[in-house]
Structures are given as structure tokens and as C-alpha cells.
Length: 101
Ligand code: FES
Image (cartoon, protein in one colour):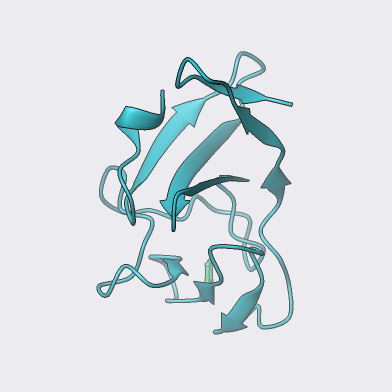
């Protein structure tokens, strides 16, 4: 549900197929990515739901500090510069539910 993911915060979810993803909100738009860093294929967060950097501006990998744009998933700094997080297509329904599209 959208209320579970406040602006500039992120929440982890597990899909029915076992994939771990996270959802974050930026300027009222929701974005979802697979919870896998393109650098070493490890999960991004160290603390629960801690997917953003200190300023809550970028998605950050806790292992080597790679930074990713929230809107595109592009790595803009760190060892995987130029690579992308794997985006998950979602739609937000009028009931506030977030669904895979
Ligand atoms: S594993 Fe994510 S930056 Fe190295």
C-alpha cells in the first residue's frame, strides 16, 4: 500500500516468486527495484529498509557505497558506475495498492 512507503523512504518486499524488491517514493511517484546491487549481486541494505543515502537523495548500496538515481536506477557513483538497478514495473491503483504491472 502507498501509505507504507512515505515520500523519500523505502520499504523492502518479497514477491511470491521469492525475489526481494524495494519500493521508494519520490515526488509522489513510486519506484520499485530488485534488491540486488549490480556490482557484486548482493542485497543493497545493511539495516532494514535502509535503501537511501543519508540525505535520502539517492539509493545507496551499503557494501561499497554506490549511489543510484531514484527515478532511473542508474549508478552515478561507485564501483558500478554506468550500470543500472533492475527496475520492477508497478502500478498504483486508486485504492492505494501497489501492484506489479
Ligand atoms: S556491492 Fe554494491 S557497491 Fe559493491
